[in-house]
Amino acid sequence: MPEEQDSADRRVRRTRASLHRALIELMVEGAYDRITVRDILERADVGRSTFYTHYRDKDDLLLRSSTDYLRAAMTAAETDADVPEPLAPVRTLFELAAGHPEIYRALLGRKSGTVLLRTTRVMVAQILAERLRDRLTMPEDEFATTVTFLSWGVVGLLGAIAEGHPPLSAGEAYQQVVRLIGPGLAGRSG
Image (tube, rainbow, N blue to C red; front, side, top):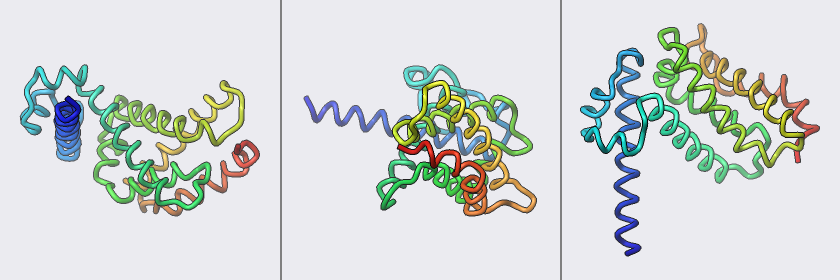
């Protein structure tokens, strides 16, 4: 039985990865609002019922699959770091944007719309909340406000990295965040 479960889990992971990759490729090629679930299914070579087993719609696919991708990237970065600092997740996000500007241009560039901006902000907020919850000591309402503030700032800088004129480097963006926000968070680090 455990082997069958492991095989099923691998199939689910492959299917989800294929759908995520198809959506991202389509976003890089064209406007998000013109992408249909049918386009994603054709690109991923996945059936409609399989798609709806995992996701409600393309917005759900974008949010959940991208958040999962970022979680994995954060985990990999944390295992590479000697001592994770409170803002380390922000640095990882900036490095991802610098390494994949075409994806972040699709998410946050001039051609992206409100759905993409909002989805990206929610995704960043979820990741930051997960990564900072145990690192910051503050009441829950203050923590929520801090994450909201930080997530909007990070999204703005991700856009500047991907599509700024001139583009901002990941290191420059990170140093700006450290200078502006680091002192305030330092007193809250647990």
